[in-house]
Image 1 (spheres, rainbow, N blue to C red):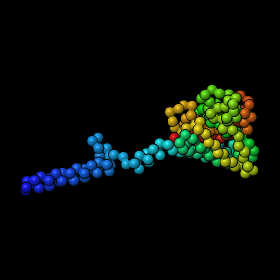
Image 2: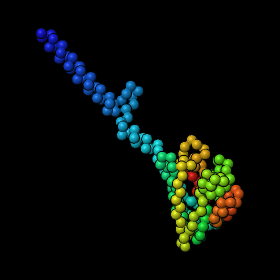
Image 3: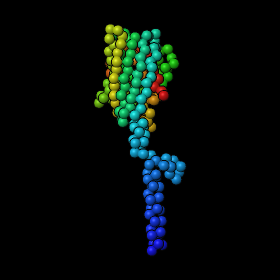
Length: 201
């Protein structure tokens, strides 16, 4: 009888010890690889970081203009939102486009190349059935103080993905002296380039 009681005590002690070890393994203790196991909360945070991305670039004046500004790009899920704030503009309409190179080194801004057009479409108004460039953002209007705010959102861009038809890293933002007529090829006859910002990290 004593032997039976002693055996039962050993079995119960081993059972409790195994339960404690199992609990440790489910609470982020190192696995066999030496890495901590992710909790549900940690996995959610990692997923959020992969989905959201933010980038801010500064405009530099070109063609003897006084234009300056800041542009922010925020990617949330499959959409990129752009917000640009400009000062030093002439009152009235101006065109804004994405160009193919993140090179703003030349005084006239032409080092940025032509419009960003990875799908080889005709130039036109954004969303036109006749075609449009991925960089054809459009026109905006500066007020009497030469200030303007431009907002734009699209699922046809990404900040830094593996799709060259959507990736805006390596491109530039160009503001023009005049407005885009959405007809003239290949760039809308918008006049000289008065501000430039390379989109780089």
